Image (cartoon, rainbow, N blue to C red):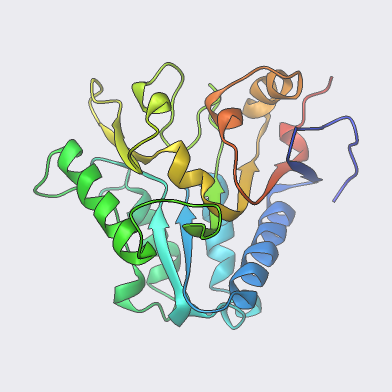
Length: 247
């Protein structure tokens, strides 16, 4: 990890690693420690994309596989494309291939966003109910965060999960789950700010030179969907050197 004091975000810690693999190992260490130190069941909100995929691959290697209390961890998704669960575009499919097919995860601990036999709006409502059943409450509170860990990425336009610039989903504060991109060929379902913010730890994973421009704007204080997220607990941004803006 390298020290970059000029990279500062309000209410968040920024860590920079020389490459994706080191970043993924750091994220795996943070995640496994948080999960193993928790008492009772704990929920994780997962992100899609290539950067978290490397993290997920590490979780089922011997170093981390034995550290994670698989029977106590419940896996949820921060967002999902409205495609079948075996579709190559599915975030669930990616995690199933990398983790669920290799780790001793009880079927009752897997909570994918439903995408079959429902409209996107109905799917969002059903997933809200699923989250509330696990949480045991229908109201989010600072005393009892929904998630132990929320994993997020960053799009080149500043979006995170499926909270895109100018989307009506950005204004949703009453529902835990909502629809996004309904006017696109592939609609999406996304957790809202209140649900994603209800966590002990939030990890943003950002890699690659394509992210330099958006990170430069973020570190200059510009506001994007990702920076509008205000986690209740600790927030850490993990970057690789390729993503770090030159100035």
